[in-house]
Image (cartoon, rainbow, N blue to C red):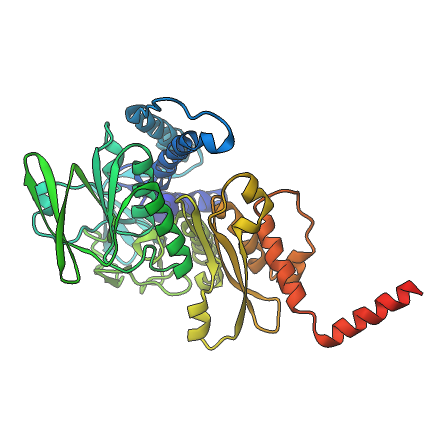
Length: 475
């Protein structure tokens, strides 16, 4: 039997491609060696957001006195119950990607390790699956740094941290990227004394400096121990605890903790696939090489998801799934670069972004103008006591074309979607200014930035015309 499409990897990208392809009449086989659902459902965004939700409830309860309500006395966090909720949420979400669910749609699920025999055949155990087109979506795994003593001392990654049954009293997070920052704040709010170590001068190095600075200020205000521009040089075990040695410039110090979470580095899952036989090029660090149409160097074979993307977000996998099906099965020419892709770090406040940063525009010689609204000027943010943050929108100078935006707010992940939609639909900032919104909402900050654009775009000539019109109206 020859399949229209063989999908190797049952994570979000693979499942979405398989579902979309079979719904359009294709004969599809999906190969997975471990748990269906991949990193996101099992050990990534679903369990982490469930834990973050619990940590926000705890933080809000502790701040109740600021709202005129008495804070609960002796607020007790049942970490075991919180983790049980995480597992319950994960199991509920995973039902949509179970073997039974996928097979009921017409997808043939094949369990086992996949290995390419040649450019048109995948072997799984004793079976050989012949394909017209194939997708590799095997994801990525943690790549811990080579630090003396770390392996012997033991450490956690996103694959194991949700197996904890008790909250560590002292918790060290290595890495100030999205995962490290999210879990550091969540564990701190749930009762751990958290130390976070970042080898660069700011957290979230890809974000704008003022956004990262707000997050640093919040972390410090909440009582987390921050070490920026600091590297972990070694780890040792003393008296059942883990002693982590640090170096910042010429200063050396150490911190004693109960658990270490490593949130630095991931490597693509390409081992054992025998990609050479399929004539598929890959890089040990960055994964499988794809073009803008998500084709590998073997144009019968596509790749999507963490195995080939620099930015490892599930919503990119959702969008790329559509590209793969359209291009592989219907010979279209959909491009990854044509997508407008937002992302969000789910700390409190959240930090979300879409499109260009100022540095990107400068590097490309594009003149831009930025309109910024601080959340402490937004009525709903004031009523909710959620005033940390801003909305910053970049437009091409002389036009209302939105080139990019950053939102820092408690609900930034929701707010950035307005701007992502506007950019995708080619809606300018002046059109956003005309949108009537419910009042009061924190998303009003987006309209306030648009209003600022409208005010700034009034030229002297337009001011004279408006003044003359107003005089005529008074006659």
